Image 1 (tube, rainbow, N blue to C red):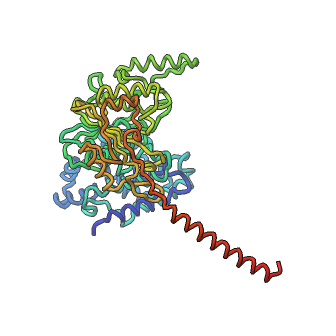
Image 2 (image 1 turned 30 degrees about the horizontal axis):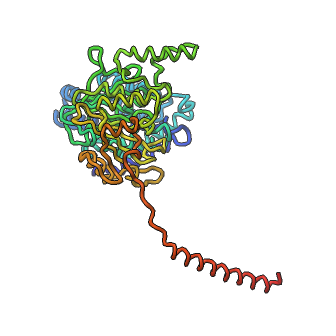
Image 3 (image 1 turned 90 degrees about the vertical axis):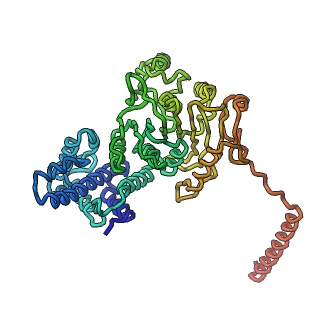
Length: 511
């Protein structure tokens, strides 16, 4: 009997009950997702072990040699079954930690550092031993459920585990509020970005703020491209680990995901220069404050701080800020400039940003002017509000292209293209298709899109605010004054009748 996707999702979400009310979802998500990863590795190992044992008629040495060719090496004492059989041990948290360490050690190249930020024996996070052990026992029992048989022969489709992982991350992001947006881009937004940049065979795809990797995975898989190379960087250690596991669960074993601050210390470099990518996609943190701390040496004088910031930014060895230095309080253009400097000669790039980047002045206005004058901005697409976790504000997608054939810029107002889904708005398939169709046709459509010339942009002083270009004003229907007069007369008559009736009741009561 096949293990159903919905059943897996429901079982995994129910397993979260172990932690609810004790620690927040932004913390317990790591325990759930790591346990899912280990369970998947273990069930796969177990099934393949049985197959090899049968094939080689119990020849232990031949079985061991065969297992060494598996995607992951797994010692018997690192399997989920071993952990489950020890669920009543007084030191179960320590046993789980040792198993994770061994899994990392045996799979250094692929899994180095993946479990560094997870501690199943943490008193600070999970409480003292008497509180911690029952929780871990309960967690292991939840994952031992018959409905969570993750052997390849039971799940069939290779995407089932990856989809379950994505399902959990999405639910955690929804629960986590503002923090949720830090590690997850809604699937439909990721799909839209992927369709806008159209990855091609053998493209290198890059996300400098990759979070849990969902956007990169969509870019790689939504367009049915089989041979692409994935690159990402994430500064949060635990989110970096989630991203690496997410890649493996989606059968992307060669993704190059680095851990670190992309602006202060970009790690995808070659011979001292930024690597170049054919496709760049990103949903960086909106208006990140103090993004420039990597350039600020912390002098006590405010003037010195300001001067030091300018000096260090201009001396950035990657020369990313030659078109202008973004304000320290808003890092949006810092990420944009980094990505533009990472774009190959034939590159395409789509990035989600707050609307402020379209019209804010000062240094951001200078950067925006340079971007437009250098003819790399291809389209401005306004999205509906309340699409993203942790913020209700509407966002915008900026699409960039190298070597554009003209200097026009397409504006699309898709702010009304959504479906309401409880507390979150969603882009439907038809909404995405409409946006992509208009982007590909690159034409003016009344109330929806507008192709602006460079002269029109200059006339607006390089302000890219969408309502300046796409007129969505809807005239109100003319008011029928005769009908209004008739309605007023009717209301007055009804009111007079009610007052007379009320007076009759008062007279009967002697009032």
